[in-house]
Image (cartoon, rainbow, N blue to C red):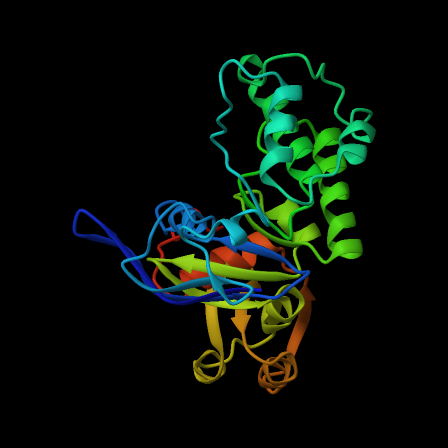
Length: 299
């Protein structure tokens, strides 16, 4: 569905994206993660057809996105920084959308008035940020897009509205195979909705995986020994982080679970517990493993 190959982009001699490759399957929810300045918004604006790449290709359904109206009318892009025509009411913007999105659904627009209780005669530009976000989702969902590209999408929405918005979008993923690419710093929320995750660092995708597979490859282990083992054990393991609390050692280890546990059990631990990892922890330790310095915040 979305294919990015060897994408590079520079601004004023500064390379922001560096031979980036990305693949998002149809009907999936793909979470794009990365620290500030990693190039997430720049990548998203290429996917939305706003930026033209310096080199490489950006394709949706096999067609280039930039200056391609037939592709763009299948895409809804909702950014953190919204823009609405200053004099347009929600109703007038809905008519504007209807003229540009062939799959626009007026019946859905009417039915979603129950979900988004905002007077459609109000000017969208005069609403609060949270209400503007509601309008963006209301209209975007009614456009029946094949692809939704979201940059910090639910920032400013209250918890109830966040749940309603995600429920509507996931319903479209299930029923219409809508493809969603979402970038957010709210990793706890992404963990609940994404099936694939890509981590962007220094303009490159450094990790890309199904979220379940990613969790199966990194382990949080607490161990204690009657007699502290030599360095042989730690040399056998790919340890991303290590901390000590009394006699108990906490390790973040990357590798095959069976092989990791076998390597530890050879040294006869008196305590050996495998704890669940969150997506936020995976993000921190994956980037820590490639040189992004988290030492000051890790505990």
